[in-house]
Image (tube, rainbow, N blue to C red; front, side, top):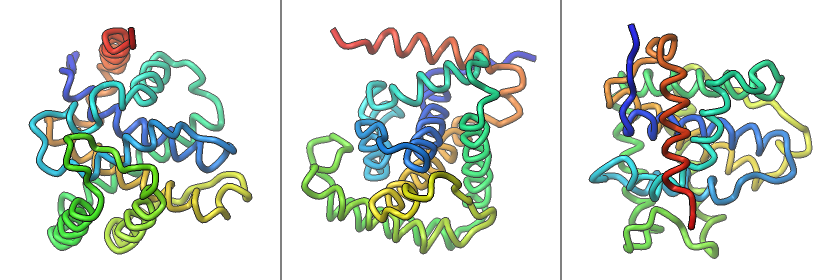
Length: 220
């Protein structure tokens, strides 16, 4: 049976994939996509959105996730070690989202923490993006909240990569922030009625819809 995803399912899954891509970049490369990192982490500040696009600041904020998803689901580079590691992160974040659904206590901790983050960092101009001058403090606060909440659930997400990258404090807090955003995106994906097994039949449909969204959001 073919499941045709609507835009909300594609955007939510792109949020998860973008988080996985960012984790692999942060763990293995000297640079990462900073715009995507700001969009993913900033999505945590949007607590009561009118639509999925608002969470990530429009499809432009998910460009990395949409492109990665389009490539991945078309089989491009699927056998590379980096891609396999990213898929492991995606599956782990998805599993953690399932655990979160069953843990009301953890949800309460997260809701309180995100509310406090919203008060401290939200710009108030409908843009889910933290000012550059406050980004380090923001990532540190998100990282701490991750440790107090999602890190207490199973499965523990083990991030592997270059020793130099994972010993850098700035990279570590960004890794946790990306994981947090990815679990939230997976949670949203399931809220849209999507299930992981649907991808067995509709990966191509997800890839095509992702490519369409990329095409329509091309800057002029």
